[in-house]
Image (cartoon, rainbow, N blue to C red; front, side, top):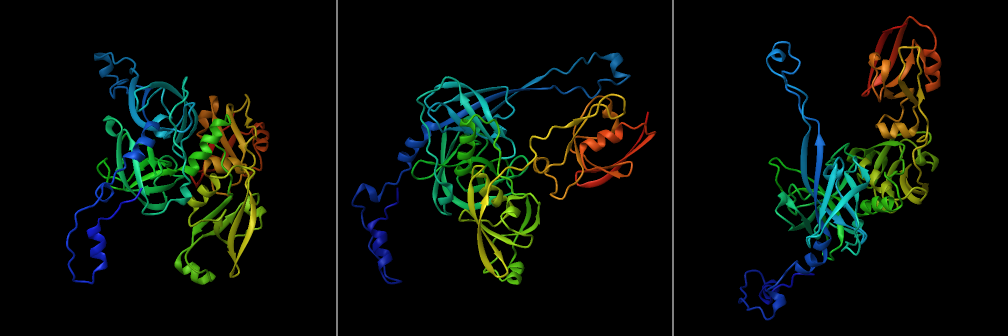
Length: 461
């Protein structure tokens, strides 16, 4: 759909500067009418309102347990509280597959979905990813529902007209209009921040989360997820999860998966600055420079090296680490995609086989009774654990995965990397278990927690 300019405007543009054109009366309806109504009629039936309920522990009185006030009052146990929340979602399959945000439905005990025509369904989360802020729902007993078609979000351009459809503030389904105001936006995600977004100035407010960002064909361009705001309301900068990533999560849910396993990069990179581009002979400050490569990284297997500048993946530009994560995530495991990189003053292209981080199925080693470490579980620090815990690629040692029983007194926490025990560096969780079987009187644990080196001293039995 396009805006038809009036005849008067056309005449004015054709006249020399300073000339005046006589205002013309519009000659047909198309010259005076411009409406998003056909797009809204096509898309809005597939946008739903989501109502959730969650039971949370009650807050204990700050005076509970106080020796003085406990004699005067019976505080009792803190009663659990019920939290209600509101959001939006989009129907993507006629049998009731709905996509929304994790922060809308991820922790809910009860989910009720209301369609634009008033029909209501109970729903359950069948796939969730807190890091990506995505949740896929299945409506109970649904069939023959209106569903949106996914657009190719890689074809979106800054300036494209878009509509945001959702249920802001619980007032009912609302449509707002705007444009795509930015692409390849990163760093605005909820959760751990692994995000790559379409930016829009279409007003998005509380309750719009999980709703649809649609293009002028009535297709789903993205899922509205967050805004930049100082007041809590829309300031004209909103973010949507691209439809191409949405498609991967829906496919995984339909395949019966409860989580989406993304292809592993196994590298660290930084954006190329203007100074770096000039020093490397690049045409411009584009791409990401590889600063570290894990030996088992698919990129290392494809022949890339530290110092190379990765410029494109599957024909799409890569200008930041988050963009690289996104470009990998929209492809399935086992796929082969072309990768372009800059080395020694020339552009090289190779094929990259997408694979998960190895070591995901490693069983933890559990420490049995007889020592102060009873109840501790540790795993070898595999690439899969490094990726899941967000650790540096160069991390070595064994990682604590569970602390229970007597081991709670050690001060160790899940996620700690144990580097050495009593001065002996550890290469595996089995080495830790063997070492703790000795009757030492004192223990020194060298570890890394939160990226910082530390040490714990314990008295033995």
